[in-house]
Image 1: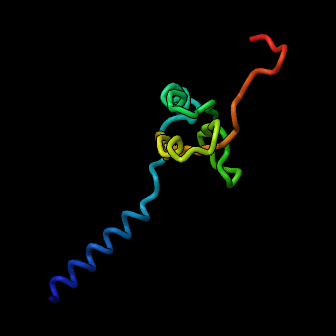
Image 2: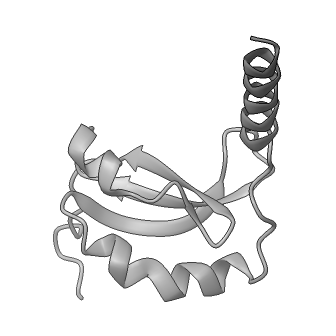
Length: 103
């Protein structure tokens, strides 16, 4: 019984330390990361654009993915991070050129 208690305590301690492990620091510039992954992101159904933006704290750079609709399946298809940068979904709706604008 004592060994079982010790094993449980060790398991909980390991789980807690893994949950607290910070994400890896990015090794490349965020613009290079976005350029490397934009085709992959744009291929996901419901994605209408990608760009470098700021997270909710208005300080941390992140990769923003613009979605045509608030679709759970599309959000699940997005990676949570790319090379250490957080990926944030943003519902923008369909994006169309302005009338009379030339391509």
